[in-house]
Length: 188
Image (tube, rainbow, N blue to C red; front, side, top):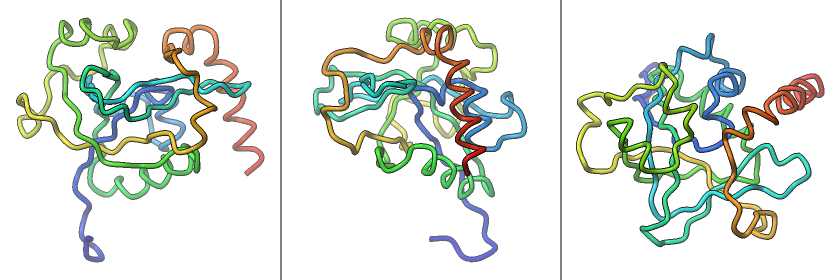
């Protein structure tokens, strides 16, 4: 717990769905620009990502399997200092009670080859804003801790085998997703 007036330390947030999109991150967190974030390719073991089966399933969820062969690829986004509390509160609101925020060990991917070997979407691998060189304090083969959001609602709402597709989200659903976010803002 920090003392009043003391600045929070940096944290990492592991994202694996719509929040990988820079514009979604900007809108949800209140960042001034989509280019403002420090995003590193990352992977979490012992989890699977599944499509949520709701009618407007623009989003996925992850759930623990305990199997180290199960991996989810995404981004570790660094949130620094005074922004930690505000960003965390906004993410908690965005994720709703359907998700629980937990801290998990993640592996930062240091090369495009590492990312290509997994399932990091091609458009993410090609994004020039992605930082392929983690800071010295995060380098190495040891996992680092990050906050992430795991599915807390009924497991029957997750597709049993279908992974969520980031590229399909960007190409086919992002426009509808933006409209949905706009409607939610107007309602609040």
